[in-house]
Length: 311
Image (cartoon, rainbow, N blue to C red):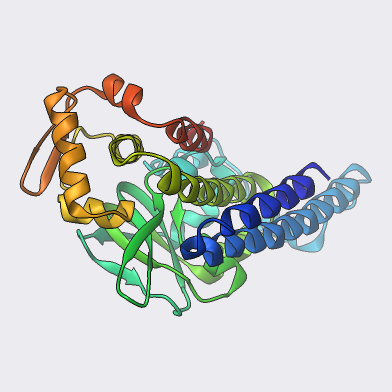
């Protein structure tokens, strides 16, 4: 009941934001619909787990489980058979759940600026970031791009679209180069429906993206460019963990949905305050604590989502 109430409140908040920001309204509503759908999946999986536990307490084992235990007896070395991943979501899973995903994971080279998928396309894979970062970007008919989400080592790109089977509404592109582990969508859906820690972590991550999306709509409308730039740099730093970021001011302007001149002015202010240093194509964070003082309150809300995801 609590999760359903949370979903309904999220939907009401999204409708309020949509009334003030038409550019992102469709995306916010889409995230809310996805959230409601996934909560229904979680409820179904919970019922299945309850039934299995009842059968177990009555000494009645499901046929498939009995065969699995017979063919693959546990041993003391099994839990150490595979190295733990650097992706926080995968690393948080019990070995019993991660071992079902591990044989299907393949390395993926995230090259800067590479576009994984375009709007209207169906996703057949999901991407667990090891290092680097993806951006979720909306594009208007006039070609104006605005970032509506970012995914780093805390999560997985493409989860909502793969689970619902719906086309993506946004561009998924590499913002910070790095590496990821790619998993077939069919395997992702199959393991998600089993419930367990994996389902909980994926749902938490999707809710975090939804929260960031809605908060960004409010932030872009109310706060100064300098505050938004500080907030954005902190969010990137959280996910990448490196003070040196390969980013152009033109690219940042597109992500913030503002003019390049505005970003240049804001960056100069942060540089003069000794908080960052920037050259052509790169920005170095010198004083994170100082950036936190400049950033708007939206960073605390978005940052809490990241902290919760990796905890």
